[in-house]
Every structure is written in structure tokens, then in C-alpha cells.
Length: 475
Ligand SMILES: Cc1cc2nc3c(=O)[nH]c(=O)nc-3n(C[C@H](O)[C@H](O)[C@H](O)COP(=O)(O)OP(=O)(O)OC[C@H]3O[C@@H](n4cnc5c(N)ncnc54)[C@H](O)[C@@H]3O)c2cc1C
Image (cartoon, rainbow, N blue to C red; front, side):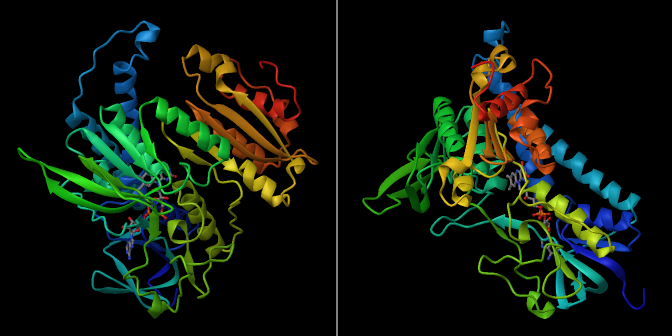
């Protein structure tokens, strides 16, 4: 290996980086991974996907018991919230999974270089005062919370927090204001609403869940409203300040303005969650020393094989363009390592599912109806849509889960499926079959004529596919 310390050095041990490191090691490459955090697993395992799902899962049970859903099935309970234990099980989940990655690193003989890496040249980085040279360097530094001008986050004070702070609240806020109606805001807002908070979501755009299918956005808004969330759409937050309350304690006072301009109003909150998006982590990486430039959005551009403009430097995950999702980062990690090893690693970016883990769940893959029509040059007749309500799905109805629908979008001429969107209690699980069908180039007829087990929520996907040609059975 001449004078290189490693064949592959990965910077960042999130789902992109740790998976890339494991795949590289499996392929016989001498591999190291630099990670500055105390534990492996990145945003996803430490402060993202996993802890948020731990709180979502637990709060879902609490609400089912408190809100009458269980009583409807003949189970009468009066739940008592033990928030300390709920947080404890979240921390246990994180500890178990991050420790699991450490075990996998040892098993695959991957060196964990503890510290933040900085390029000193195109093939050398410095980590914790040590210089390390590698034939290939994969940048997998991920992303962090985008700040909002005029709103200063201080997670320790637990008044104006970001997603990391919102996972750790020591008590249920009376009123929580969520700035940003995207996935993370709606998930964490749901957690605290279920546990008893009044939740108001302030969104700059005219609808929540930007990027998702129009019908899904509208229906989701209705469902969340029915659950008690309040929405202030087309509204921007220009300032948030912490103020003392008479008789002790502190509150946040927000200044809101119509997005289009107009009179300002104020809104008080016990806790404000700032969740307006995430931005790539590139500060302090010394990219200039490596000769790497960023695009206008601060991301590292790559070719389809994840190589950058500098030979030997690769990039994956949240730091490159595309949806900021753990499974996208993981698949890119595998493909990138395979390309470094001389294999052909491919990620089909047209088929990346996305899921909102609220109740019900919301999931989609491929094009929205709006995107499909736009791609067809605005010709609505080029796109066929089949919809099926969960209310008419026997399992969802029996389980008292009537909200939502499945929507299959297909090319009118070829019948090839272009996108699938669902709102259903188990939409996150259902969407996998749609992604697989699309990966295999399925038509709506292929899905419609595939035998689905009864009674399952997935039958709604079959019926929505049947509806593309106007032949669903149960509506
Ligand atoms: C609250 C929340 C919930 C989420 N839920 C989901 C979900 O349910 N499903 C989903 O798919 N996605 C979810 N996401 C998004 C998901 O976490 C990210 O898309 C994913 O973690 C990106 O992976 P990554 O490997 O690119 O980067 P990251 O996971 O961000 O990891 C990057 C790592 O690099 C390290 N690092 C950065 N710079 C350096 C350096 N110079 N040297 C050494 N180490 C460095 C960081 O410490 C970090 O650990 C969620 C995010 C949040 C915040």
C-alpha cells in the first residue's frame, strides 16, 4: 500500500459513513473512520431517526391509552406519564445501537480515529493532532440544524430549542410553537402534543410538508388539525426572545408576520422548536486544502459514482445534494465503497422513499402528481392516478384507523408506475413494496394483479393500482 496509512478513510460515522466503512472493510480495503462525536452513528442514531422514533413510539402508546383509542376496543386505562422513564428508554435505544456500530467496527477491523478531521492536502487529514494519509477519502460529515436569523437556540435553557433540544425536554410544555411544518417539526410536535402540550406550527409556505404530493399535504393538514395541532400558514417568524413571566419562570415571545408582508403579531410559548431545515457540515473541514469547492447551497457535488472533482476524494449522504435521509446516505455509502473497490455501485435516486412517522404515518416514493404532470410538459392526460381511501380497507377500518389513502401515479401510455403516496397507520412499511415495484419497472397493472394477503393495509396499494384503470373492488 506504499506510504498510505489506509486504502479508505471515511470522515464521519453517520449512516453514510459507518456503512461505507463497513462495506469497504468487507471488500478487503484497509479502512479507518474519523468521528468527532463521543459515539458512532451520526445524527441518525444519536439525535435523529432513532431517539425521535423512541419518543414517537412511546407517546403513541400514551395517547392511545389517554385519548380513548383503546377504550373504543374495550380497554379502559388511565395512563400516568413518567417522562423520566420515557426518556430513559430513548437513551437506552441510542446506547444500544451506537454501541452496536462500535462492535461492528471492531468485527470488521475498522480503526475509529477519535476526533474531527481536517484536510491538510488532498490525500491527508489531521485528526486529534495526528496526520493520516489515505488513498481514498470519503466525506460523510452530514448536516446540522439551519439557524433562523433573529431566533437564538439554547438547548440547555429548554425554551428555544432545535430538534436535539426538543428530544430532551424535562417537562411537557404548556404551549409549544414549532417553526417549520416539515417532517422533523411535525414528528416532534406530535410527540409533545400527545403528551399534553398545545402545539402551534408556524409555516412560511401555504401548506405543510413541502416536497410531498399535493393531496397528501392537504389531507395531512386536515388530520393534524383534527388531532388538535394549530397551523399558522403563510407566516414567518422574524424574532423570538426569552422574557420573564410575572411570578417567576420564563417564556418565549415570538414576532410573526404574514409571509407576504403586513402587520406583525406576537405569540407566547413555553417552548419554541426551530425546525426549518438542515445544512451540510463543511465548516472546519479544510476543503480549500483539498482543492474542493462547494456549490451554491454549500453542498459537495459528486458524479453518479460519488467521486468529487478531486481524484481520490468521494462524498456521500447529507453533505451532497438529494434528500437528507438516512437510508439514502446508507445506500450511497455502500455504492461508494463498491466503486472504490472497482465494482459498480449504483443508487437509483428516482426511487428513494420518504416517511413521516406521525400518526397516521405518511410515506411516498417517486414523483408527486404535480411533478409527473410537469415532467409530461403540463399535459394532465399523460398521467393516470388511482386513489383508494383507508376507510375502505378492511384491516384499517377494523383497527379503528380510517384516516388516509393510497395514491398510485402512472404514465398514461406505458402504465409504468411513477410514484406512490400513502397516509396510513403503517405507511412507512407499506411504501417498501411500492419502492421495490418501481425499482423493477412495474406497471400499475403489475401491482393490481399481484396477490396481496388479506386483511392487510397493503391491500390498499393493490386497490389504488386497480383504480388507475378504474377497477377497484371495494369503492
Ligand atoms: C430529529 C431528526 C429525525 C430524523 N429522522 C429521520 C428518519 O426517521 N429517517 C431518515 O431517513 N432520516 C431521518 N433524519 C435525517 C438523518 O438523520 C440524516 O439524513 C442522516 O443522519 C444523514 O447521514 P450522514 O451519514 O450523511 O450524516 P450524519 O448522520 O449527520 O453524520 C455525520 C457525522 O459526521 C461527523 N463529523 C462531521 N464533521 C466531521 C469531521 N470534520 N470529522 C469527523 N467527524 C465529523 C458528525 O459528528 C456526525 O456524527 C432525521 C434527522 C433529525 C435531526
